[in-house]
Image (cartoon, rainbow, N blue to C red):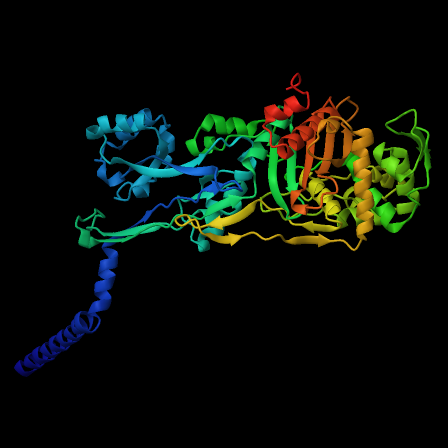
Length: 608
């Protein structure tokens, strides 16, 4: 019995020795062999990394002298939840809500229950005025966990109609974060929501810095510079646009109170010199967090957030006759010098088709048909000689129904209908009546004002089209050195003979000389060529009005020429206002005059 007992003790002692040796070996491995690895892990666990916001790049007009978007320093308020004593959270939130004029539920929404025991500061308000910061400071003793810091926000300088080009920024949404997380975006980032801010967000946003601090077991920072690792943020790139701020302001004033758009394009490069869309909005309301004003803009039935130059499409009306004239001359389907009689109407398909001149234009050849904008001529020639397939081919070959590729988000394709489209969309066969409608830019056809300007640019360039763009240069924010310069990019090139476009340009000049004389007959600084268009809205005496032009006509310097396309929605004035607005732009731009000087030069002071 005694031997059995001693044997059990020996076995037990042996097990203890074995266990001790195993633990000793394990401790030796952890502390000696793998000590550095575990030390690194321990340091990581006891550290917290905080991001340091960067400043977005600034945006300038083409001359790099006038900033359009800059940054301004403002205050942001944060709450460190764990610094608030238990039982005081409700009272602190209520006090802060009263001072900052932010609903309590909005503050609570930023403080989920899992955050209430952390020492991580949570931002609850930005762009806070100094008076509110002063009020917080006065009550600091009763507001534990509340702090504030300087934060950079966007400031859109005298933006006006540039709002649609520049866009605005806002907090990144959950869906945006999901899509962009792998590109370095994080929760709480500001991101471009529209315009250039959105298109070039990756260039503008810069690189956030970061700071790593050692903290205790509860996440509180441990003071001492040896416990801090700091990496400075890098500011975003500065962008220089193709926009001429002075010309933009001139076009903005010329458009006046009318709903519509004006596009000014340099045909030799594709540079957009001005792009006005009315109504516009103030992007600073998004920076300032003006909830009521944001809601008013979002619900405004006039749709001020829409850039009508590229986001909306309209019937091209008689401006489409430029496409038709090009097709008639290029295909030689009907002799351009052979007259066709207009009696003021034609009958087809069991109905009467009235020309806009009910008395009739008489006998006209192609040039005068374009000058007088004779519907009967284009109805008959389009239906009987050109045909739907060639009309569609010429329209799409000149960019209608296709994206221009401009570097702004939300561009519309417009629509050039054909037989297949109508069958799929309306479950009906194409008719010759549809061909007649399309021949004068009515029916289903839709184009954007930018596409219209691009069409004229292609005519000016004798069949070459350059991609329109608004970015001119990317510059280093510190040295201002040019890091990228936009080069012109060929969008499409026609195989139509340059002589065809020369004839079309001559006919466009005749339109201004013989039909749309005023106010261009008062402009001595430049000769203009162009085409008008009027699309009636329903049965009311209201129209969409177009005037698409270029000048100087027949210039020997392509870089001197500009295309101006003006469009006014739902007006009773028809051609009058687009003509006045276009005349003011040409007079002001080529005579180097202000808006007021141009108005006086054209004897329009009573109207403006």
